Amino acid sequence: MTTQALRTPALTVNGEVTPLGDISVHTTVLDWLRNRGLTGAKEGCAEGECGACSVLVARPGTTTATEWIAVNACLLPVASLDGQEVITSEGLGSAADLHPVQKEMAVRGGSQCGYCTPGFICSMAAEYYRPGRACGEGDHEHGANGFDLHSLSGNLCRCTGYRPIRDAAYALDEPADDDALAVRRESAPPAPATTGMVSPEGEFIRPASLDHALAVLRERDDAVVVAGSTDLGVQVNIFGSRPPLTIAIDRLEELREFSFGSGEVRLGAALTLTEIERRLDGRVPLLAQLFPQFASRLIRNGATIGGNLGTGSPIGDTPPALLALDATLVLASGRGERVVRLAEYFTGYRQTVKAPDELIKTIVVPLPLAPVTAFHKIAKRRFDDISSVAIGYALTVADGTVQDAKIGLGGVAATPLRASATEAALIGLPWNETTVRTAAAVMAGEGTPMDDHRASSSYRSAMLGQSLLRFYHQEVSA
Image 1 (cartoon, rainbow, N blue to C red):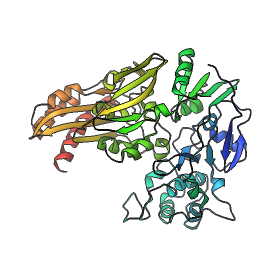
Image 2: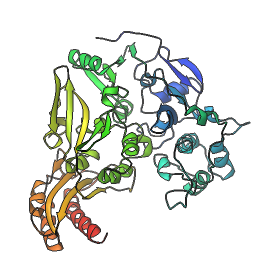
Image 3: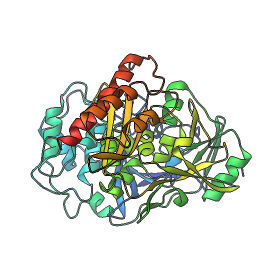
Image 4: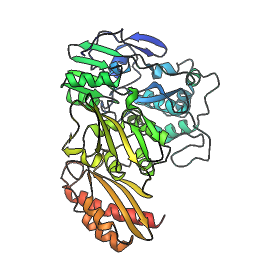
């Protein structure tokens, strides 16, 4: 089951098929592009926080065959895009024939030093081509042309200021009928290639099926799985990690299930957060509140829900919300499948019940949903930040009494956890300020918060109690 070169790995860049060549399997898309003279994309942070490296990738769409998705080229191994299609800033237009996005950025003064500009332009182009972008009245985060400013939340400008960039975004019309990239949306993206690459630093496999992936995992206990690479890419770039075997699972159909039935919601572990957000379309309000607060659009375009759970991080944003939703996980291995409640999944710091030869296949959320929900994220920035504390709420209140309560917590212990003592202090009691204040005092004592560079333990505890009070007052005043 080890790597075998089945074909010559290649990537279509700006319409030209280019072999990947003799490279390390850990070479990023950014380094590969720049080594071939496509230097518009830059490295600003090497961890997906600045967007200077943004490029467009053709991915399956939700309402069109293809959607142009902006991703961080600094995080993705180029081997993971074997057989796929990429557009860089150079492929959008030229000095003699500017793309509409490039033109608006130029005439409205959206570029100064220019370092970040190609990345902004690629992220802006992804939103320009987003199906369903429709004109309207606009608000403080959306233009009258339907442009969503959150599409640029992962792009950092260091000198120009964001007003002219926003002005450029809000000035964009719909793509012309003969716009090649708009027309391209009507045909399917390239099918994922079965890939096998070997270099002195290790091996890379894109298996043909889930069974193939599980067989490799059973054979190789040194294998690392990668989907969006928003976590592994940081380990490779910043900490010099070089896994001996990397297995790409992001395009396995068995891990991309989506259904919204009468009794449950099923979310494939390899679906990106953006895909889930758009397919749910607000039907799970707790997750709808979570998505805009999860990193940035660039990260959500790559990050998968299975990857966020698979890391076992105590500060991941999805676990508190999914704990409140009483989610379960389907774990798959060569031995078959088993179902684990998320509340029983985490066992220690970055440790879970998942065996080394298992993959998270599906996340299952039971229906009906609790009617009173909220997601609170306490962080130093409103968006694109790591949480100090995260809380997911799901309550059922009937006739003024709390009938059921599920509260998920992150950032206050070695693992995400349910606030079981707080839940007990609410259930069966009146939904009023007296009950909530008593429960808030209990909630302030949940977990074992620690001091670190993001927050002190006392601050985290105080935020737990304040969050519950805020939740109550927001609900009663709604």
